[in-house]
Image (cartoon, rainbow, N blue to C red; front, side, top):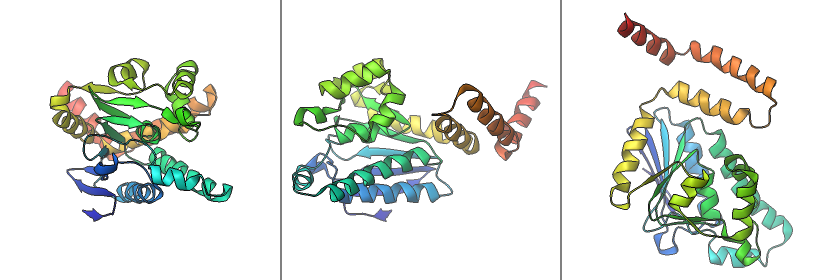
Length: 256
């Protein structure tokens, strides 16, 4: 286990587990926690045995957003310092996007403001039935600016606009209906359901999953023909991986 001040990070069974560890602050984000998250994400990307990254929060909540002390301090900072802090969060989201393995956010309790943004930056979101989500920044005259680049790729434009301008807190069931999250599990079985989901994902071909994630996000800003061409390149690469050769061989053996 790597030692951090505000999070826990460990890896076993192909799963790198990163836990926001400020339960007394509802895992609120501050510059130190964001820096530690960036380091832990980078370390998990270097781990040869890592197949999946599981991101969660200690205690009752996933993450309540920005730490109040950090928020108050930012009101006294100049534009360069505030820009540096915003860039740090953007760099974290970019590192999650570029991570070679899938990142799964397991959300219990509240994921609000920057905490909802952090969950949205993951590739997959699993939620307990009682979980709540909301981009609540507008309620204090602020803007969920960094996450918008991801949110507009996850939801329809009108739905994204509604969420970021209303500041509404929505249930896990509503978030699922909107397409914001992937799965909702009962509260009482949530920990085991998450572990089962992550274990199943970790059992998939690492090369196939990595190439799939790379291609999906690589085609974000491409036109149709360019995206097809990118698919051709990944298709050809995938055929040459050991995972694919082994998988095809086993399939053909069974078919015969």
